[in-house]
Image (cartoon, rainbow, N blue to C red; front, side):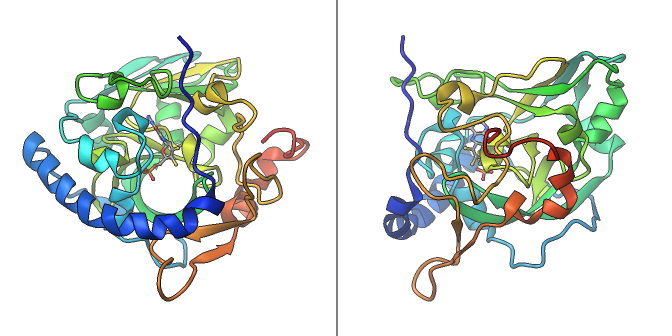
Length: 314
Ligand code: MTE
């Protein structure tokens, strides 16, 4: 059966329309998530965190915006669907399997991991391929800490990630339409995965992750477009071949493996030169700003790509 490929909405079209739409979402999602929480009994829990030097000197996006404007196709295609439709999802208990080309593979209980690794609060600029951005106060631990624990073999070159498949709790995985192939999968080169900026997030704003943001464990790679940030991760596998990624499989012309934020390489259907900061658009300003190479993290990460043609390797 052919896979239906939902178009990502070109930013040129959504800017004015989204201002209107978001008013409705704001109210709808607030009511929706209150109901969802009631239905599942899920509760945000306070996290014990340590401060990190990784912070952006820009205002953080509101919790309301971060938790009501989401891409999480397992719960539907609309930005407001994940907040409305993720109430039945159960993020506990949770284990993550780490296997493949490692000396010490294992299946780890997430609560044990968050006791073992200090949870850092870090504020990152996040940039979506749809040309909008947010500043998000994540809580998590470096992916490198978990990779060190399993001891990657010298032959390992890539890290593959996989989201849980639970159609009974994720309405977008059954439904009448097939939006993407499940499980959602992603990948990084091992050196990108080990970079100190690469985070496994377990919370935001000092509390456990809401379901719509990828509870209980999701990837955050702030110099890449948001779609690399795979949510609700159950498996991390080390390999020597470049892993398959969901968006590349869905549409290789539009989405590459690297997905580094590059304002000079336009998406085939829209410009990547600027972005709309969520929460700043509206009456008093456009909220539009220039997009920075590597989303502002060039000093930290540009060296990872020396010798690589970033126009060809988008
Ligand atoms: N992970 C899964 N499993 N399913 C998804 O649909 N969407 C991606 C990414 N991770 C997605 C996913 C996309 S397109 C984006 S922009 C980010 O999650 C959005 O994360 P946020 O909702 O926390 O901002």
